[in-house]
Image (cartoon, rainbow, N blue to C red; front, side, top):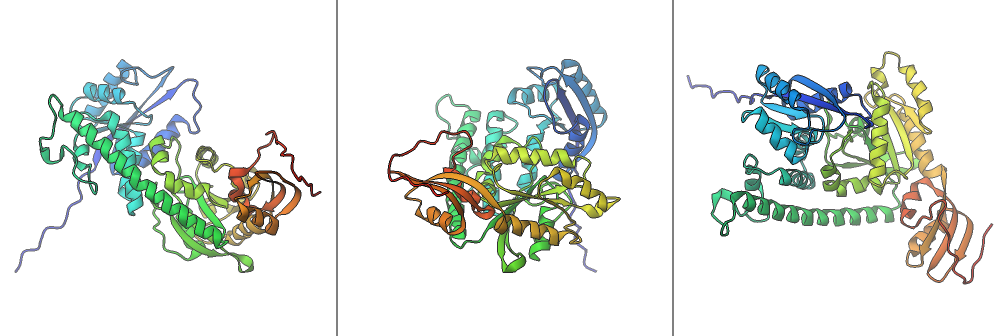
Length: 455
């Protein structure tokens, strides 16, 4: 009888010990306990087993080890006792903190922070070439200032697709007196430059694609929300699509766009976007600029909130803050209070509707409330009109025509360089005029020409 080949084995998961620090005077959306619970879920998604946690409240971080020296000794003893191989801080550590902590905890323990864990999850879940480029850039920018002898393997991964890095394979390309660490840093800087050039091409391609969609007059809607709020499940339900869904953080990373039919024979393009999270790393926001521009250029946002989560309102606030940071805070929003099927009393979700101007309580899994949500979306796109005041250059003839065709003009003034328009336009068109908006309180300079006013 032929011998059966051995079954493939899953590599053992590393044991992780968590550390959370609350700094006096700083405002946090989540309590220290809730934030560590979220970090524990992140670690689980990244493939780590959490074996314990330690907390401390400080006036300010210790300059060398972030936590106090007594806590470092306590952490070292607990890590040895629980056989932890990784210590993960819920706070972002600077390179010095990381080096000093690793030296204090011993050679067998690695020190990571929340940002490093999120980067690792993104690396696992990026499947498109664009997503992989963005994750690589974020990883290299994060690790470059932290590069020591323990991280030089990163430099050997540099150069994929853009030529081999100077230190790949141990080839001696060092100049006189140059250390291997300096060579590795230079190799990573070259790779960062290459990745940025590649992503600029991606950004230009996306911009061209968005322009084509605008010419087709199809409104675009971005699904936004905290990670694991149910955006992909909602897109699948509305578009009868098959976007990957899993009950874990950051299950979907690459944006997916699908057509959805609204009432009244209208059609819109819905894009599922990467989930947000509190303390979203700045390296990720920068690297994912091309993807986040999909949100900033949308005609409407559907903010999906997991209403069954105990911190639902704090998560919603975190998403709103991130939208402001990426320049999307001005876009009209419809809120979908999702997962009412997980509530002990689904009718209780109606109490939360009062916190949002336009909201529907739904279950993306069962389809309950979906008709109300789609009606709100259609109303926001086609029936609600937003007040607007813009000065459009004459070169923007298409936008001037768009305002005349679909808007309600209350005032118009023609000047030497452009036209001042005030009135109301459909919600689905508002985002296209953002670059030329005159903000409340901003001085309007009159251009003495053949000015006319339409009442």
